[in-house]
Amino acid sequence: MNKTALITGGTSGIGLATADLLAANGYQLIITGRRADRLDTISADLSSKHNVSVETLCFDVRNNNEVQEHLGGLVKANRQIDVLVNNAGLASGLDKIQNGDVEDWDKMIDTNVKGLLYVSRQIIPQLIKQQSGHIVNIGSIAGKEVYPNGNVYCGTKHMVDALNKSMRRELAEHGVKVSAVNPGAVETEFSIVRLHGDTNKAKLVYEGFENLVAEDIADAVHYIVSRPDHVNINDLIIMPKAQPAAGQVIRNKGL
Ligand code: NDP
Ligand code: 8X3
Image (cartoon, rainbow, N blue to C red):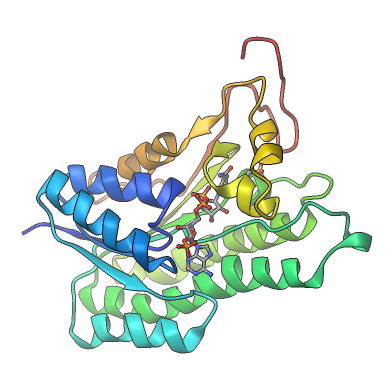
């Protein structure tokens, strides 16, 4: 029987590329996001391209009632979940703390930390019941290091790093594997969202060097979930060649 992957934030970027690659490798998909029109289009595209079933669930991970309403049903129905990719997330703003916008902070904390917890809270009991499954948390280099103006985003991703380690220790005895992928700069909608819709400024973030693309991260997720059952990849950090550390990019040198 085909395996099933539940991917949060499947409407663009890393989540979408991961959905595409896992479907190409025979996974049935459940993808989530807030943009219903995109979910519809992506579901039609991926199911016809890969001949797999693609279910969509439209909800905001920040709203625990919505999360319970949409994911609780899967668990009640005893749906086998083989892979959960906790990917939905964002950065909002690039200000120093003294100039920070509290709404930006709330958005990042509520999405990257509380949203990931709300989703995991619903799905982990099912994985324990199955005594199998694999959670892949999408962290960031911002969860390993910090950089000026990254403050709250870095904080949320450090928390993802801590939750990733905690989940792994708590779930190992249930036969559930937990891994994280921590990328550097990947060109997706990430910077457009971080810069509040300023597409011109967002383009500059990726100028003068070869950034990662969403497919690089999807490839890593697929590598992680396709290891033999006795092997777990705890943690991967994936950077562009031109980004040796968080907040440091070597530009205009052909890298
Ligand atoms: P995108 O903006 O392209 O994708 C983000 C995805 O998250 C979208 O599908 C979006 O769906 C979903 N999402 C955001 N907020 C919510 C919410 N409140 N409820 C439900 N879904 C939500 O960015 P990326 O693909 O780059 O980001 C994916 C993950 O990768 C994030 O966790 C990010 O922090 C992480 N990451 C990104 C890096 C980068 O440089 N791009 C580097 C390191 C980590 P919708 O808008 O439809 O709700
Ligand atoms: C996104 C990568 O380097 O902008 O998580 O923080 S970075």
